[in-house]
Image (cartoon, rainbow, N blue to C red; front, side, top):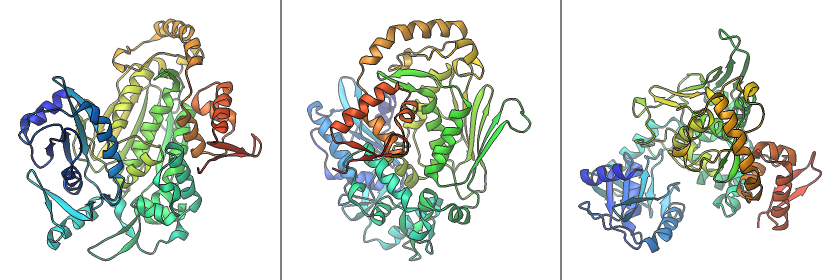
Length: 503
């Protein structure tokens, strides 16, 4: 969120989708009521450090950190907000004052605050718990708006793959050792994630479509979502048909792996320094494209989602329950979740970032990768186009060689597009200047743990390839984690697996 956009919201004043809170030193209970009512209605902008009439007082800088932590913790406390929400407050500096801002998206589920039901009316949060007709309206509106919430009452745990549930649990713990799923049973985890639902109009209860898509057997998925498939194609030589093809119709967790691996197989990799860590930018681009395709598509339509890799671009499209039409501008973009349950689940297991960051990341990394700006076009069909011209172009590896580029992109606005020999000479110099620095940087253990949680059978060499790091540095990081008791290796490097400590 930019200061300019905040100023515009302040000038427009409070309303159905805008709320100001004074909250100088701490959060008050009305914050949670607003989050609840925004979630139940149309979503909205929450700005802290501002009076009701739009006057900026600012948040106490010494209290800001605790306020942000409390915001996250309470949204994951079922005694306060149920079901849990994954939102964060971000800092916005305006005229020397610190404001805290959060965009609260509309939820696909009915949200409760301290066991009470709130709705938004004008600029007020209204407790409608006892108003049965108004409450029924909310339940009805949400049950028809989100296909992921369709309930399949005859689906049981036998139709789900329990090993995938355990895998997801380990992935979440790999990112957060104290994750709430850690000590939950499988059924408690599914309920907590909103995958076991109840329709209060009809009385139906059971696993919803989101649960089937995430954990269902392939035959169950085909029965419940017959239109769900993703067609991945390579069209470089044979543009009328294809050079390679992969059709994916399995659960979303495995589908993510298959599709990102397909992109990795057919596009050139380049490594850059991001936050002083050498990473594969191509992998980040693939991550954002695939997660967007799986999380935000409309599964009730029989539209075949596609990923097409051509000579000069990577193109993806899927059917979308659109909230706007036209090109997305990352500087003036309000994220709207198409499948909030699936989106929240992907965030928990590290397959996606917080709402809205994926779009900004894609613009950021595509510019680094190829020196070009991607296009995201929203309509009934959502289209993502990432140019592969320049450094990422097919065939450019012959002219550039396999030197691997290392460029500091911690400030993306400073990264300029390069092409041809200019890129070759620049990357050679940068590599020479950065190799010594790179060796001295501490490894991000969370990245290693995330890969292990995703695939406990990963060998050291596979971890090195996945992370884009020398195998010696991976061994060093693994030794540190083992000494700390975070992980241990069961069996040999080939054929064994990693175990993440439950402590």
